[in-house]
View (cartoon, rainbow, N blue to C red):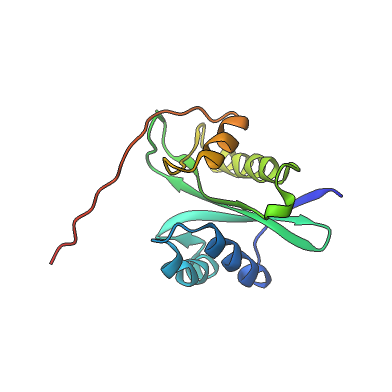
Length: 152
C-alpha cells in the first residue's frame, strides 16, 4: 500500500500528540499538548516556524515529522536551516519507507523556505535513530552533551 505524506490538520491533532508522546524525550512530553496547540494557533512551536507532516498508509496515520526553521544548526554553514525536530514511525510500519518519505517531504518543505541545508539530531544512546539517519544520507557532524542549571 502506498504511503502519502500530508500536512497536519486539526483533525490530526490527537494522532500527532499520541506519536509525539510515544517518541519522547521525557523533557518534551510534558509540553506536548502546548506544542500541538501553538502549532495550530500560529504555525510555530517554541516560536520557531514549523510544519508538521503526517504519513498515511491507507486510512491510517502511521508516522509524523516535525520540521522547523532554525537560524543555526551544528555543522551547517547557511541560515536558515531546515531541522528535523521530531520523527516517528509506528513500529509495524518501520522498514517500509515511511521514514524516508517523511524526511523527503521535510527536505522539500525546507527547500521551499529557502534552506540549502537540512539537519537533525539523535540522542547519543539511540543507536536505532542514528542508523536511520545515516541510512538516509545524514552525516554525523559532532557529538555533544548538553548541560543545564536552574536559575532562581
